[in-house]
Length: 291
Figure 1: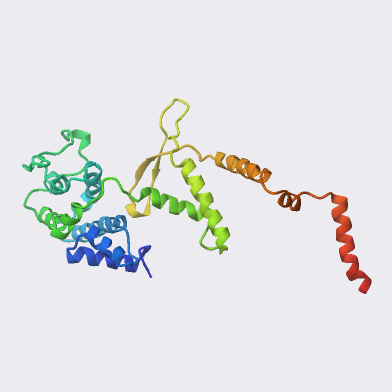
Figure 2: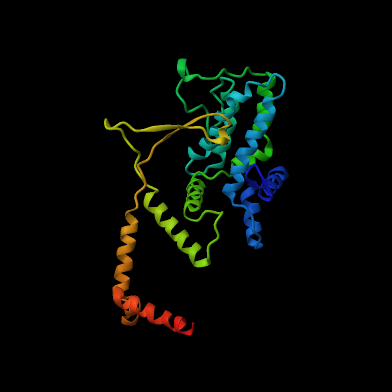
């Protein structure tokens, strides 16, 4: 059963971990030690991100909280930045960075915390400000603090992974659909071969350079992904994928064939056309004479 293109059981497990206040990493590790199939830590935090978005959407629909909708993308990005900007995974630093967001949206950039005393951005003036600050003490500011500083959520933020993200894995899973579409059934060897081809293609093209114009400028594209709900994102365009690995694969197969036993090479050797036609007619003449 799917809910918003996510397995409902996975979402229920993430919800159970979150609302019970348990540590996601410890809970999932224990489930795996028991030999139970469960979600990964990365999947849990992806659900966490979506959950925060849903909570903000619900809060923005309340009276005098409409301004929260404008801050929703920035808050989600801040969650990623909290982990990405802390390469050593220091839990105290990540917690202070996450809590600083509540002050930031109220135009308060001095936080008084030892791990993260002030915002890391330069002064926001003119075009750098694209949203109105929330007024301290207003209904919207109080509601935002309740949503983002819940004890269970702060515990999870302390366990964010600054290194192990699932973007590459999700990109590879998407690529598999091109080599092995779900609407077609394959044998075990057929599926195995297609997975190997997908892995070869992904490894060969995962580090492509960005495409550039004739003047050397980086090319960009504007996308409208569904999860942005009408919003847009800018992404650099990469160079077209290369299939040079196919030539190397054929060369490797040719070398392997040349080293194969003589009997195997003879069985797959080509036959002259006249000889093949003669064998075909001789084989079918047996049935024709019976008539």
